[in-house]
Image 1 (cartoon, one colour):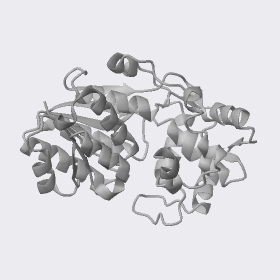
Image 2 (tube, helix red, strand yellow):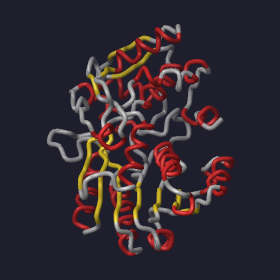
Image 3 (cartoon, helix red, strand yellow):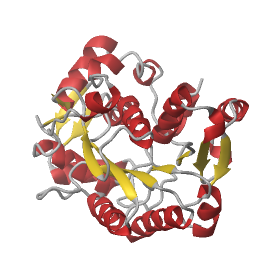
Length: 324
């Protein structure tokens, strides 16, 4: 059996890759990304030494993907980082290329709510359309619908607070969510890639507790000794706040001055979904597929303590700490 993991330069794809290496010989693995220079040199060297083929595969280049995918059996697809019609087309390209290359099974990373009424996050139409295309394609599949990542709040919200006089600003109110840790998502992704899920089934991938951003903020303030303060704001004030930080509203915008690589429309609708209780879904997918209970916020505080200890103020500096 030969496996492919895409997006291995990213935080989810790299975790899936690491988990696959614990279970499968490197000679049976292909890791891809758009540009190999995005992978830290020491990580790339280690993978190659273990026998992994590391190749470039661009979601816009179907011919390239067919060539890379040919000869493999199962494929893990990290969703594209852009939003809108371009993203949907990229996902279709990957599915088409997989089928043309003779891949037998595809695991796709979607988002919680893609199949639910009343959910209207900015990114959801892309995932809903991709899931439908995947079902209609005829290829065997699994879908993992991740909840919002816990790291969004232990890293991104905190670094924004670091540049906002320790103010944790959000319209999420007292809403709670079952945030999923990326380590758990990576383990689930590897499990599905290796065939541990029910065929042609989608799984809601959620965390092990219901917790609010307000509680996370208070937890970090207590541990760090830094007076991080939770500020609930109106939707209009939150938009104004993001604008003041030069965070563009769409993924087509200018990120040259933005402290994070996420667009405002995405961030705003995610916060609203927490406020409205939409992300409080709980499932047993993590334990069922990995044999482990999902991580809780308190389990990750030390891992990401560098964000407050080093007063990280931009997402672009994270690699200094995550890969050291």
